Image (tube, rainbow, N blue to C red; front, side):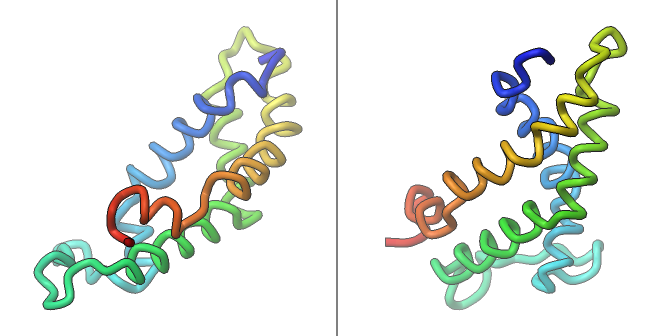
Length: 124
């Protein structure tokens, strides 16, 4: 990982798949919008449907969670153990030194809930 900055997108996919996609129900329950694991929520069945406010509030929560220092530390450790190959001796150090600031910068620049919800046509 001599040029770890060139691998940020792959690093991000690795952590998003593990921390968000694989744990979607857990994140939903952390937000207090999903019931127990056997009762899947049905936002589309609500009288008001899934609103712009729902979308923005949900992404605000997820953004805060994804930038929490302890979650970023977990992501970094996960990447050290699951992204770096044994032959890449410098990779764990590079991930440790560069992933957290790259992640913070990318989240600030690109994780803008209202823009995401508008792009997904949830918000006008």
